[in-house]
Picture 1: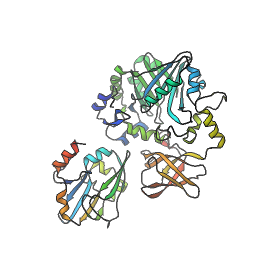
Picture 2: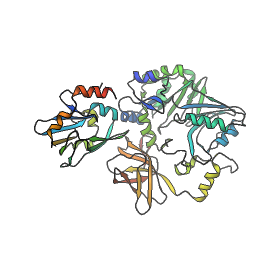
Picture 3: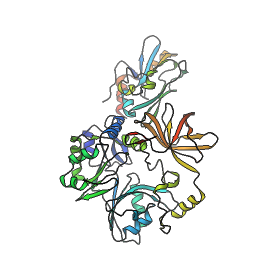
Picture 4: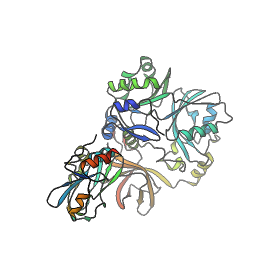
Length: 129
Length: 361
């Protein structure tokens, strides 16, 4: 069974979101997503300063098996990216919720956060996969 | 459709992650396909390849039949047990499948064909065999385990029955030998030494456990694909299909042109293609920077033209991305590959990336 921390929010496309409480969120892919993809070997991160809407493709993660888009869970500006992943994409497999985070977003519409799934809903969602 | 091999329960027991492959429930990995890849390059790994199709061809007419059915010539097989890699072509010179055929004796050859192409292969073979004294038997009663890696043979020998060990001692590369209902080939699909062991279904789970006890680690289909690509071995359905000639898929070496009067299926068209001259060449690509090559990406050769990758992946040995590709004949040692709208630089190399566990170039 994959890990689903209760303090995070989730999307149907398997991103997790941590509300940092200062108008920014941290985003990564879930344990379930990294398990489905297998060994990650490449990450394409966006430029900081990129502004995008919720559900826009913002990163690409590639495993040996397949390439997969990562989508903006909420609208806003990408303010920090996890540069360390470029040389060590396997960090996402090892630590999807901590060291394997992808980007930090400055929210342009904080209300969107309430539209994300909680851990229980995401658990139900992935059980159907 | 969802077939299971006789080793399915073992895959679950050993922590295999199961995916559908050509209608079979097969393990894609047992945790990390990259670890499994290194395991085979450095030591010994085992793969369940029981989904592959084993066909016995027997009878007086087998040799003349195979001389027509296959683009390579079984007459090259003079010593019993010797194996031959060949394409089976359609009348347009396209590849129906690639296969290994073992010469057992004058009226017994054993063929191993792909799982995904089983139905059409059997139908084709049956249709072409009309008029020959040949009996065609699919051996779905056999399981197959490939044990591969520099230490594969010594470890496998610890797990094999005594009479089989005796039969395989002294077995040379690209030979197979039968021992009762067991059959061991010193062949594989990883670029490493090892055995492919065919045995009765009922005995396969015990052998799997025995091999594991001897230190052979279970490996999934994921590692099998990165290993074969590093070794520059073609994958049917990606690198060649029914609409590609072996001459544009790096398989010209498997076509036996001599003797000239051997009228194998597809020969007429292949001969025409050869006379006209093939305008593409078959190469390996190594991506210069970061990124992952995949099949069907556009290859751009400045001032020359365009080509296409047929399969690509991340090479765990080289720690770079590699691909097999069809490019214009005049292509030099550099090209670019289009990935998500960007042109990335790649080196053009011979289509073999890793030999004996090390970078080939």
